[in-house]
Length: 229
Picture (cartoon, helix red, strand yellow):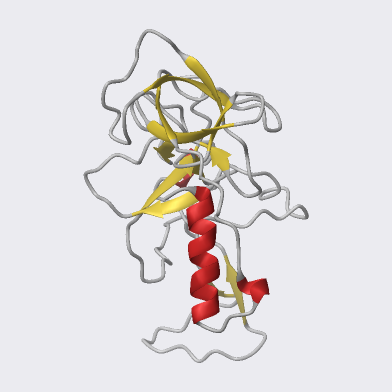
């Protein structure tokens, strides 16, 4: 149907339904088709909205028939509360800007770098762009900044406490021992009467006691900048 035929059809339908002339709208402009691109490398992280990835044109969202002969530059705009996360062979949908450049519009944003989340999959590695918060990190990935979360509870930063005023500081288990000692010779009996003022509490032992509340093991994972890998 031509544009003129389409407009006449709309006018005829509006008249038949008793619609006002103001309800008649011209045909919507055609939508630009998505261009599918397959990343040839990990994304490149630059300040502001300068992030980009080099990619090959492909036939569909599955990455079929990728043209490995020509690598095109695809812009990866940032949005508040998110950072790009594109790895080699990942397929993203793009649109052409007015200047002819390609701009990613689908499947390229993730949580901000530095985000820590809970991961409950036992035998599955964290997704691309994420590493487990354990000593040394996930093999083939950088160590997490919060790697000392391994076997530990998170603690909020406290600028007024030198022991907890910086991110990634860590500490050990506190000792918790109390022993009562008598300031006069003990009587030879199995029960001792304690009167106020005749006993004092001192630290006598160094044996650690578990003071953990009920717990459940999870995996902490951290979002990292994988653009340099």
